[in-house]
Image 1 (cartoon, helix red, strand yellow):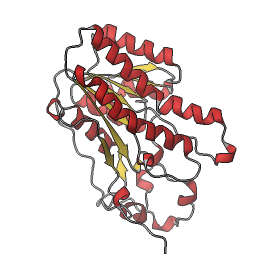
Image 2 (cartoon, rainbow, N blue to C red; image 1 turned 90 degrees about the horizontal axis):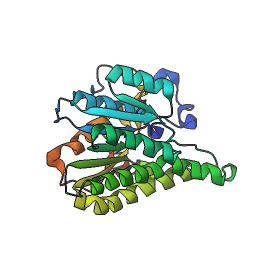
Image 3 (tube, rainbow, N blue to C red; image 1 turned 30 degrees about the vertical axis):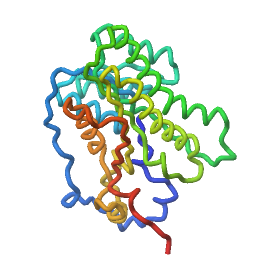
Length: 283
């Protein structure tokens, strides 16, 4: 359950595009940058790491010489990612608080500590408001928002029990540009992402005495498997002249995890090719 809403277009948007406008853009699209950072052996936990942005984050930290574990509800994709990257896979439905906490406890017992937590897991469920239910709304919050609190609280308890001395730590939460922009039928998603933005700076204050920084990243349109199918219009509507890639988000996670970047704290970093700064009117 990777947080990949904005890497997919709404079907009604795509349906109006002519197939003749599609282009591979193989020669003009920038290739993802190579991540050459090498950390001291860091212990990293990623939620929703089996596919999409989550998998890219797992891969990036593995390439940076980190010990990585991730959880996901998709056992097949999780096993494939683990085999491809050498990361540990833990099948967990994050709606089950006991299961998520047990997963963290196993890692803390095995590793002694967790240095970096990336709260990436998320889902959409976009339906018209009058067709949605209270259960639908709460389900989105249980997947997108509550795990951020659960994992952060668990790490705080562990660090406090270890004496509470300030030490290197990073929590990186995946938000979305939907925390400040919306379409109809996205109430649960928008509420969960707005909650992550606010929870991030609240956690920053609570975890400061432990030396743990807390930031969030708000991706815009990040495309994964369907990137070659993007149209020229898809790319050129972005001031950066391209649709985003999962590696764009993974690189920021690596950047935030660098020890010298501890002065970035409580921030929501938007990575959207400039779209939220673009003034748009319909002719």
